[in-house]
Each structure stands twice: as structure tokens, then as C-alpha cells.
Length: 256
Image (cartoon, helix red, strand yellow):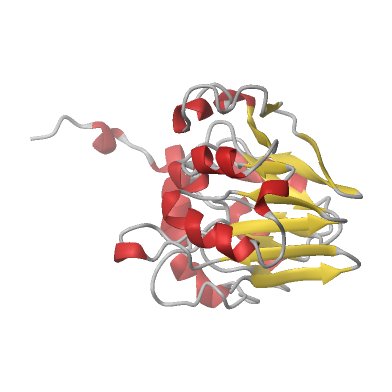
């Protein structure tokens, strides 16, 4: 069953958290369905492990073939490896992804399936139509992908943050929102130190998102951040050393 993040005046945001269970080898990931005024989009639909159950789960809320957009934060397999199947399942849905990945994405599909359906998001971001409203594609480059975007919904005031804000591990329930960051950092710190490129980029990101009213940060892996956890997370990553900040000659030594 999906988690209802927001539901008011015909605007609905749903999160699917538990679709990649086969074999227990794949990383947990979240997928999102947003509906406004009978228009639907999916954000980061995931790989083939998630496709079947996501498709069936969506049918209870929105006809998948009527989706207007498939939106991808970047081009990792856990984000968009199921694209070939979504191209078949949808009549004319556009695929929104960074211009950097626009010519790589067709490798997930049979020849010709993406023709005329790809929309390259410019580095500065853009507005993506959603019913009576829109989503903001916010620049999040190098967090962690070279061409990377987050998606802000001004109606629900939710920031769909991709890999930034992710938490991994077996010690927490991804369906339970986190309202205080202190006890949850143990599931976040090692991931962010490895997967985020540099503190400089995190500082730029923090400066940008502080201009937005954000009620929830909802990452592609792990738990929702809400309440006090939102400003706490922004403050935490703003001072986090990560990625190339931590590299030394020892990390680039010839193996024995």
C-alpha cells in the first residue's frame, strides 16, 4: 500500500516504499505518483524489480496509460531502468531528465521507443506542468550525479530530493517519518560522505532550498524527513565534508 503524503482539493501525492523485495539484494527505493486535476506523473519509477507492483498499485489511483510525464532525477538503474516498459505502458508520456543524460536514456529501451518523447531539462532547471499547477525541477548537480535534479511541489510543499537525504540500513522503518535528525544520522552519514561530491555543492544547495517553504523532504531511499528534521538536515549537510573533500593519496594507490 502506498503512503499518502498529501491529499487536498484534487492534488494527491503518493509514495511507494516496498516494491523491490525479490531476493533482498536490491537497494530499497521509493517511487512517487503525483496527481492534480486528473493529470498524473511519476517521479523516479525505478527498475524492473519495482515495475509490476508499481503499475498495479497505481491502477487504484490513476490509469497508468494516461500518465503525462515520467520524471527522473538522474539516470541510475534504480531510478529509471524500467523505462522500456513504461514507454510501452503509456500512450504519450514525456520523459523529463537532465540534458546531460538525454542521449544515454535510450539505452534502457528498444530502438525508437523514446523518439519524440524525451525532454532534456536544462542545467538551470525548469517548470514541469502538472494539472492546474507545476513542479519545479531544481538544480542538484553532483548530488550525487553530474546531471541531477530534485523536484519541488509548491502545492504540497514537498521536496522530492533524490539521493540527497537518503537513509539506508535495517534499523529503521522507511514508512515511518523522521521528525528529529539526531537519532537517524547513523543511517545517513556514511552514504552522504561517499555519494555526495563535495561540501561546496552542499552549501550552494542549502542556500537555494532555504528560499522555499518545505514541509517535507522525501528522498528516493529511506524515510521521509518532516517537522524539525527538515531544517536540521539542511544545516547538517551544509557543513558536511564528503566526496572529494575526504580523498587523499592513500585512496589512489596502486594495489599490492
